[in-house]
Amino acid sequence: MTGSLLAGLEIASSDIDFIVYGNSWFTARDIIKHKKEQKNPITEISDDMWIDIYKKRKPDITFDEFLVHEIRKGNRGMVGILILTFFMSGTGGYRTMHARKRPGRNDH
Image (cartoon, rainbow, N blue to C red; front, side, top):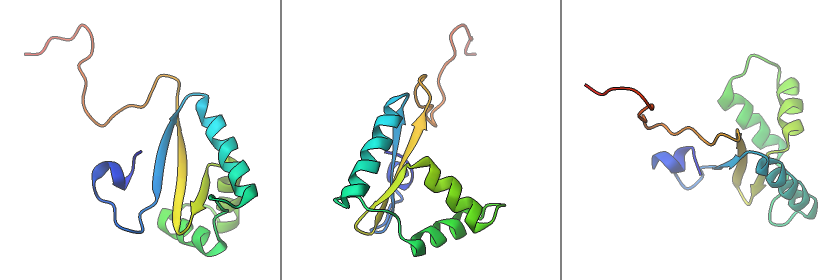
């Protein structure tokens, strides 16, 4: 998980953000699609919630353009009042916020 949960800044209404590595993202997206079709436990995001997401993001595109782009990705759904979002990380793995030593560099 990532987002506010990772940083310890979550509140009761915080969304749930997952990072899925490599091609497993497509499997996760397909599972979300299937569960949304069943409407249990994951449902489509409501129109009001999409408007809230748009306002929070403040993109430089119209709401309609934003909605088409976001729905096309198929990586979001809702469980009750919580939003689920799956983010893809490349096959190289997720880069953490922590600095790592690079091979061959001297620390002085």
